[in-house]
Image 1 (cartoon, rainbow, N blue to C red):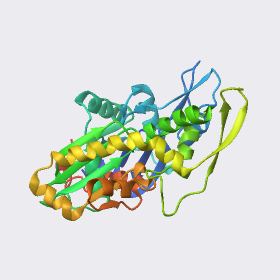
Image 2: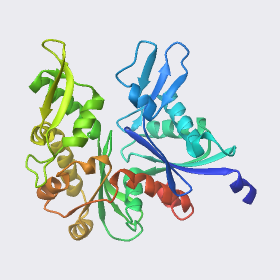
Image 3: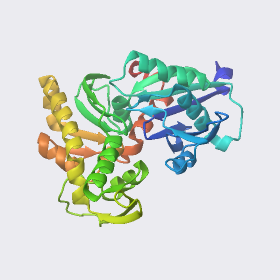
Length: 340
């Protein structure tokens, strides 16, 4: 067994719709966008991660960029396998030992089907994993932010990622009730694209929309510490000529309102189906927000106003899930009950 461990490389992967993070030796060694660029003629990989991201929306007919995951699950099996393999090679910058054996812990959305689960497992195995363990994202997020999941105490976790929003009530090492909706960061981006097109007659791409979301994205039309207006460049739909406009956080708050309302509805639904004893615990502990969506300005205040419960944003919410996955990997025996 000792010799086997010597030749085994252990990695924890947060396979996200927007970003993929890998932990190896307790460190986040890979943090890259979940995107690959193919050569159409040879079907070979040209770039993975940040390099491929720079190509998105700017490619000619011989190059295509692919996002292997959609709504938190694998949509393009071949691209996902190439992406996982390529990102594993990035560990040690492609240098170092050859590891014949990989042990992987991969996190998955809680609302995933058996077929989608199988696709994640198969992709990981084809990418070189000998052992694959799957852990639900809300559970990994809870472990990552330091909650003792084994306690007979109810905790509500909301993980807003790129493709899905996972809402789960956790107690005694299990998910008691959950809601998984396919409304998250990607929907915010498409809301912004449509709003800029409708309101300003300007066409922008997904990358620009994401930049707007990061710079002036808001869940509330009035903030105590508001960001300044942001300059946006795009194509004027009337003249076809490139044009620049400025957008304010108030505009973005109005255009994201519908999607955020869907998330609020799902939170209320999850609270509705929570057993009364756990509801009493949640009243005490409040709600924990993780994932990239937790960084949206004013979202915690908006959820707190809607639910009348305290809302805590996790420290470094983008990495909460991968941190929890890394802890589960390190203590695989102790956390085996959380895995599948």
